[in-house]
Length: 616
Image (cartoon, rainbow, N blue to C red; front, side, top):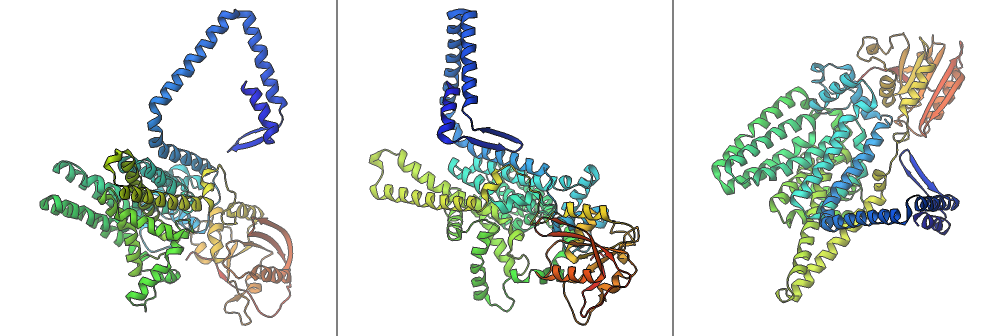
């Protein structure tokens, strides 16, 4: 009967084709299910002849008993399904992302810089100045260093820890939902974390941003967990555990260090309201965190916080220094749509910035709302003091907290609606009934609009099995492997500044060696950094002069840190110096060329300046 229904459905719908990762299911011809139906009919006739009518009756009775048992189990557990929905959603997303993680998509500039840092430095050398214009907490660098020593210097290995923290964020969201929220609020919390394309993308980057999100979600929740203990001794034990967790977290994630002071304030204030002596003890336990923070600052973070290069690079993501308090607040208000688009991945910014604060203010659990409200407040306060830029990944750690705020609004609205619906009719005032239902409808409509917009903005991507072969339009891994396969000792290799980390990483060039400090590979090949400009008076070494004495030049045009017309200018200049022996494209942006150089190249006015490519 099922096969006959299947056969009838195929011509009515035109067939279907489903793909779940490597598994593909399709049905476009009704003949196949009709054949299955015929085979089943033959099997029934054969069974009837072999076992008789009594055997078929026993078979039918077994199926009825089984169906009855399944129906009874479903009826007895139907109330548990809403509570299980957030966990099922989280498990599905984690499974999809693990599949993507094993595909090992190529790395990007920031990842390659971190990978080179942990590959070229010992554990003791990781503490020190910023290298390759990128930074990460010292504990994170040590964890990545340990990972490559155990599993090898591969893309999958380096992304194992980010993927682990990404999955941990969803697990923490499920725990928060089960402990403090009703099923609608819990489902919204998990959905907003799971469907955020910006957040999920960082599961597959070697930077610490998933750890930022994880700790910024876990630490406020653990504060509430510590406060809610019934006995004084248990509260002290939990408070000590929270301070230890915060101390460990700050070595792995900047987000943990940033959210800790606000959460600590909530902990001390809540303890003070119960027992002043306990409040002093809770505050004194913070010396554990202060000691860890001072040590971490002395070993590593002072170099990041005092880096002029990094500050100047992100200066536009701070309020202008000349702005007064009112102008700074206006600047921050104008950042709300920007932050909603990234990292929150939604254009419905008005709804987001109304729902989340309302959730914090009117949360059924006031302590939970206060703890998570400190997270976005810390972001804006530190931006005002020019410490943390209000820009995309640097404030990714506010994403789970804002999701909690929206979930708290849903939780409170659902409680109000359920409460008024369950009360006897005579105990509910008409005005209160209408008001609560109206609030529930408005909140539900706003949240549906928010979730729909987030999913429409590539949110579905996080639910689809897929293994991208490009990263932001580039495949550095394939391009550099092709380049190194064409490479011969003594060649000249050319690339712009932000492409060199890809060559050093995927080309396995030991840039910690003395030769690299002079712009050379161990085999004598020269490494040249091209400045993406065409100057009349050359401010440095001319391209023709740099290539003199080489028979071949290998060029990789990768990371787009140059004007749009620079690649064409470069190729025209190389045509004057020799002839192209090989050329390949890798993605929309990547181009690799091999140039056979002439002994007496042409000369033309202007030049492309070059200098030795050495680590910076």
